[in-house]
Amino acid sequence: MPEKTVKPDILGLTASLITWGIKQFKGKGIQDVIEAVHLQNKEGQRPILRKKHPTDNGIDYVFALPAGVDRSDFERERHYFESYLNSIVEFEAQGRKLILKTYKANFKKKIPFDFNPSLYPEMFAPFPVGKTPDGKTLVEDLYNLPHMMVGGQTGYGKTSFLLVVMVACLLSGVKVSVVDRKGVDFPRFAPWVNLALTDADTEVLLQQHIQEMHRRQRILREAECQNFAEYAEHYNDLPYLVLFIDELTQIRNKACFEAIGDMSVLSRVSGISMILATQKPGAKIWDGFTDVRSQLSGAMCFRVRDQTDSQIVLGSGNTRGAELPKIKGRAVWNNDQDQIVQSMYLTAKEAYSVLMERVSKGVYSFANASNDECTERIDT
Image (cartoon, rainbow, N blue to C red):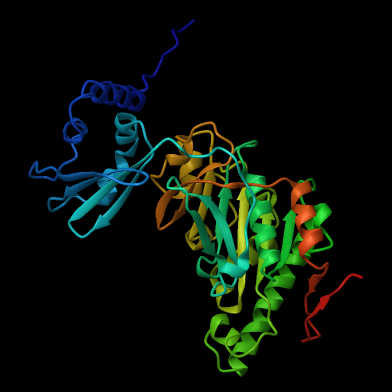
């Protein structure tokens, strides 16, 4: 029997050695960490610590950057800075200056849902991403994304976050549709959302969104408006629409692939956003799609199995989703830049109670191909 060949984990060994080296600098200075990870330009010039000052939330380290070194270089070594400082760290670039921010250990692990969209009148579809390490609530507008990917292993907060976004949208007057291929989490919300549970229902719902997108484009042309935001300044007859798809890996129909691809490129101008969710963000998730991932400006990544899964959700080279602690609701939000957040916690039962109390029942009725009118169905 041939001997089994054991391949050495070169990357893991290298990371372990660097982490060991950093620990040797405990009690010295953060400048020594920069030297340990060889954070420098081609001429060997390194960032220089110019100032260190306390803040209400932790400590800020201000560095002067040499030519050829920027924020992305610090991002690549984030793990080592966090290990040395024993803190979540964030980086803020200001020209040739970079601020490394650390935070006190007061990051709550469970934050109940609490959101009032009326505080954000300038937004079409506001939703709370979560609490940042400094205790602030991060709120985004789906219209500005306009599409988002959500990924994470079972049990780490993906479904709760989807419920948070759904309820926030409905509280804002946004009309919601949901593809729920598991058929477990969303059927109870049928009084408020258009629901698709089967392959056939999914294809129909996606085609309804495509037809609605084209209908709205005609309306915008006739009104001589460039986009949904401009139209909304003058008219209020088109509500904002959001389509949730959970679980993305269950989409196997070519017509569905094409519909999602078309919407990812064309739907923002007409006031339609998509949220694509998966608990299995493997390398084959985009098989059948054409260039959809590049259209998803927002990404919310809860803890995932490995670095590959993290990069599927957050983008090439971004492994932070695999480095998250085993804390439910802890996630990396990415919209150009990473932000660690603790998402709000909301169960399906709690979401139902909020909607019963604060949102009238009724779903959006899509126009038929032969009927250019679109109405809202109200359940009494």
